[in-house]
Length: 265
Image (cartoon, rainbow, N blue to C red):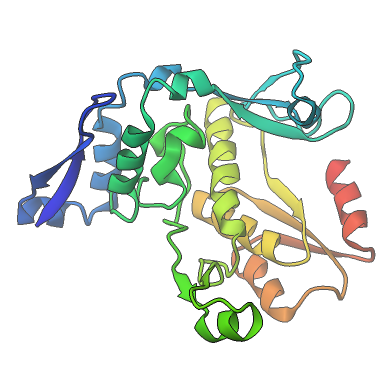
C-alpha cells in the first residue's frame, strides 16, 4: 500500500511516496495507537510561531487596530463595546511557508486516517487552531462531503451545464454546522483540561441544526450540553438529536431571540 509523507522543507517538494507494511495498516485500526502516533508526530519546523487570538470584529471591518485582543483560551463572548469578536491569525508566521507548500501539505492529509488530519477541517489545523494539541481535538472526521452535479437544475434554471453543489446534508448531524462545531468543542475541551472547573457545560440557543451539532460533539467529548429551544418551533427530527445525544433540552415559551437573551445572561 502507498501513503504520503511530508517533509519540513519550506519551499522544496513537500510530499514523497512512502511504502507502508500491512502490519502498520493493521496497527492504525486501534484508536489508541492513532492518538499515540499523533503525539509522537514531529511538528512543522516553525509551528510554535503560529498563533491566533480574538479581536473586535469592528477592528476587522474598519481595518483599524484598537489594541483590544484576547487569548482563545479566555472565556469571553463580546468585545468591550458589546460587538462581536473575530479570530485573527498571525499571517506573517504562516507566510514562512510558501503557498505551494501549504497546498501540498493539506492535500496529503485530507481524507486520510491520520488523526486528526483526515477531517476536512483539521487537515488545515495550522489555519484553524494552531496552538491546540492533537489530543484535545474533538473530531468525527467531518467535512470532505461530496460535490453534487446539479446537471438538470443548472441547465433549466441557470443556463449552466457544469453546476456543482457542495452537499453538506450528508454530514454527521445533517448540516454544515458540524464544520464549525468541531472547532468550538475542541477549544472548550482544551480549556477544560487547562483549567478544570472553568467550563461546566456548553449551551446554545437553537431552532435545530446548531443544537444537533453541539450535542453530538459534546457527547463525543464527554462534555455536558444545554440546549434552549423556542417552544413548538422545531421539527421532531431536529429535536430527536440533542435528546439522543444526552443534552439537557429546555423548551422555552419564547422565540429564538428570547433564547439568545437567556444564553447571554
